[in-house]
Image 1 (cartoon, rainbow, N blue to C red):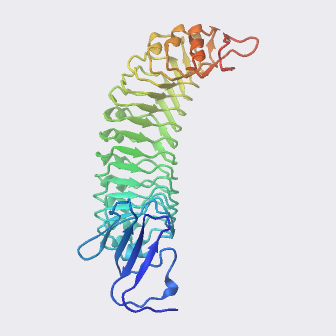
Image 2 (cartoon, rainbow, N blue to C red; image 1 turned 45 degrees about the horizontal axis):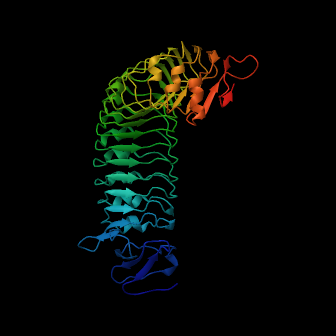
Image 3 (cartoon, rainbow, N blue to C red; image 1 turned 60 degrees about the vertical axis):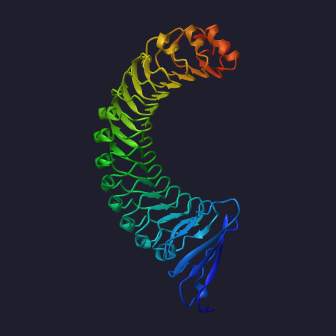
Length: 431
């Protein structure tokens, strides 16, 4: 055991870093060297300065101090930092406003001492290997605006104390192993503009209180184990532009109140247990992507007036009736309605006027008649899948010309076998 008297200076070096940092400790202090951990050493509670000598070509903004030489900003992203996150980060840097250690290889846990960092505004530790639970003491940081802890190995529940963070603007807890329910208290953090809780193991229902977040623009709850209905209160979240609830166990119908989300751009509800009819979406003038596939939706596909819609995925449901009029969806690029019970003819002027269409997949329905020659006018069409229907006749030369021009790379129909219902010499695959 060795002892050192007086001010102590230790060099904190990341060999792949943009700089070398010298950590100094306040006043006389006796140090037990056996407690110094690698690679950081041990940043004791008497730390008062981090001085960084930057390598040429990088900005001088990673570390800043206040008038008392207290560290206010510690920004060390993408520096190949490894080993346990020192507890002393939470006990010795009580002037810290910005802590950004994302995209390193840090291990260990977030200590309950985080409650000491009362001035913290930015807390970014995503893309590391942190474990353990999120301490409830995080709710003591009344100045906190950004929490980014995604892509770690965090477990346990989301603390109810999250709702105590009145200044919180962004909450990123995605890609962890969090369990339990979404706390109803989240509705109290009314300044939130983005919430990423996707790719965890969250259970229970989506709390209706979340609809109190009227400033929220981006809500991602996908790839969890959430159940129950979509709250009708979601329609009150008028600022929403992105709503991802796919790959859960959501049941019931799609709330008609979603039509009130006039700023919505992307709506993803696929791989749930949704039932009932597709609602009126005609108020969603900016909607560009709607994914409703892999549910148990019934009824017909509405002739929506969605001028910005580019992706419409409704495959693997129980939809029936004729193909809709697509005049109100002129920007469609990808249309998938395969694996339903659609009837009627594969013709219709509105389909052939979708000049931006790149993918048209209508296989495994009950469509009949012949294939319209006008499909050959779709000069961007790269994928046309039609097998598993009651379509007969010859593949039009106009469509085959798209394959010869190397535009149409995937063309599939019921052209296989002696009793083929479609004669097609240009198809890339016959069923």
